[in-house]
Amino acid sequence: MVDRLRDSYDVVVIGGGAAGLSGALTLSRALRRVVVLDSGRPRNAPAAGVHGLLGREGTEPAELLARGRAEVRRYGGEVVPGEVETVRRDENGQGAATSFVVRLTDGSQTRARRLLVATGLADELPDIPGLSQRWGRDVLHCPYCHGWEARHRTIGVLATGPMSVHQALLLRQWSEHVRFFSRGRPVTNEQAEQLAARGIATIDGEVVALQIVDDTLLGVRLGDGSVVELDFVAVSPRMVARAGFLTELGLHPVPRPMGESLAADATGRTDVPGVWVAGNVSDPMAQVGMAAAAGSAAAAQLNADLVTEETERAVRTLRVIRSSASAAQR
Image (cartoon, rainbow, N blue to C red; front, side, top):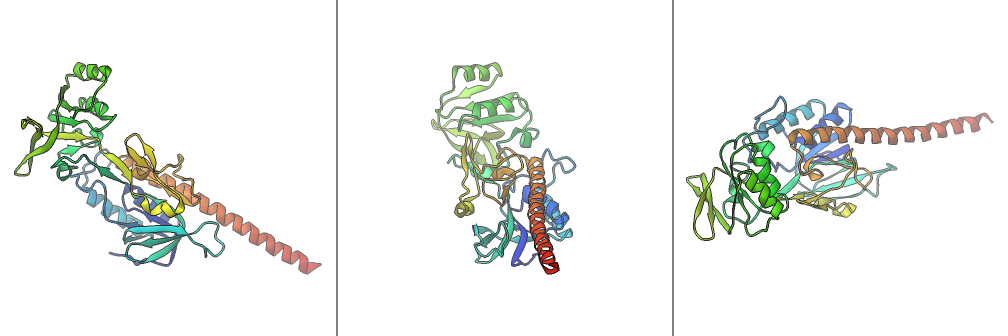
């Protein structure tokens, strides 16, 4: 089922993942005119299942999103495939306090009184042959997402930044066979002591490629030609918000220790009036359940903002009516 993009909505939700669909579901049940613009590029697409989500443990990501789209549509929301190219202020907002024009890459456009941005992020991986191809399968980054599947297996952690030692120490919870590949990056004396105390071997030297045979990960190949056998590889990617289309609004990602994300308050409200964010685009560490909760919470706050605007407009109208009636009686 494909919905047709209409001329205007109360809320345009940009991003069709857990955060965006949860926000759209909340808004649709609040009787708002809502559309979800879905680029069809979910971050967790390579994963075999969603983990840590109560009641849906192990569900395939595509199935979870299909269920979410059906639920949004059940309450009158719309889901339209497409990627947003630009967002700008609507100079012809017909008196609305806030209004936006959302333009898609195919040239179509629509208007919105409010925006909920839930486009997630892009994982930028080290340029090591084989790494991106195995991403989400036996190359992992989140112990809480994939630790159970890697339990008691041999895991190699590739150093990429300041959180890599912490990642290795975390994964030690799931496996007693963890190897830390420093890749020429120095560790402090304290970190070296922590790794040694937990029985995590540190391996120096350049990692030049993953060793893969018949679509099976065998380990990593070092610069000297040797191969270290592994069942899983863990890496901390640089996580960058998918938010370039917001540039014209003056909304830019801010630097974080592990990448860039959009800044917002606890409700998802950004510094740009009328724009809310939810999920990985503002919280890179949010799992599916956390992203879904953030989408729902932001939608509730967004709806309350619309109610406030509508009430203020109604009060102004009432005052005009009363003033006219009073003048007519004089």
